[in-house]
Each structure stands twice: as C-alpha cells, then as structure tokens.
Length: 169
Image (tube, rainbow, N blue to C red; front, side):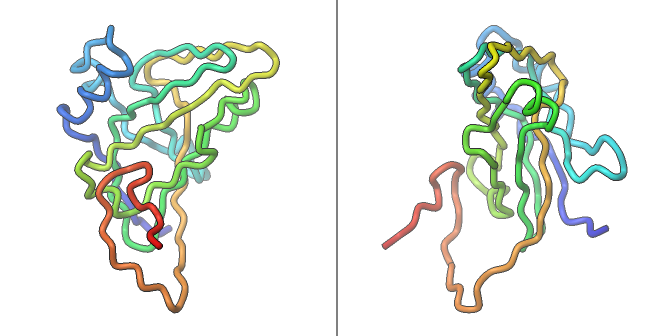
C-alpha cells in the first residue's frame, strides 16, 4: 500500500469560527478537543470515516454544513474523494450536496488551512429523520491517484475552497 496522505486537525481558531456559525449553542473548545481524525474501520476498508464533531438531526429535506475540523496533506497526483457513509445513504438517502467532494492536494495550503466541510442533506422520500451523535461517522473519504493530459499547462495556485478555481476564458 502506498502511504500518500496525513490527516490533521485545523487550528482551534479556524474551527471555532466555523463551529459557532453551525453549532452556536455548543462549546467550540469542547468540540475541538473531541475531534477524531478520520480512520478506516478495517484493514480491508478503502474509505476513511469522518466523524461528526457535534450531534445533529436532519428531518427530510433539511441540510447542514458540517465543519469537520480536519485538513489533509496529500502527495501530488492524488486526490481525496468524499462520499456519504454507505449505510446512511442506503437507510436515509443522506447525500452530499455536491454528490462527491473533491479535496485536491493543494487545498491543504489555502488560507482556511484546508478545512474540510461536508454539506449534507437528508433526501429521504420515506419521511425518515436522521439523528447522529457526536463522534458518529457520517461520510467517508477515499484516496485516488489521477493523471493529467499531455498538453496540460495549469500554473495557477489555489487559495480557497468552493469555487476558488473557476475556469478562465
């Protein structure tokens, strides 16, 4: 197995601001201290489980943007792809809003410290409410190697998350 990445916590300052926006009733320091780094459940698992920093409930149609408190250093030519945990998707139709999250290797160096957020929706068409406790796994990340075209000439440097690498004409 190639070892190409390392999960870390973002700084408390980075997490605190995001946490207070999403979980205003919670103690950000307590949540920060309880952040668990993503890990595989078994040696045969491809996915690294990401854990909820705080308990949350989503009724059908509701959405939440979860600050994971996690960043990841990734070797060049690799990417981390995020998906909902299989059981939650199967049982509740829990979905990532962008269907698959793409964490590029250069995101680690962004001003926001490469803080990974997961925006999820309970897309249940059966009226099921999703309730997860603090520390419960809610999404999973898989590292994949990728290639580029022979004539690729990208030279720009990322600084930011969603929409930070918009196409230029």
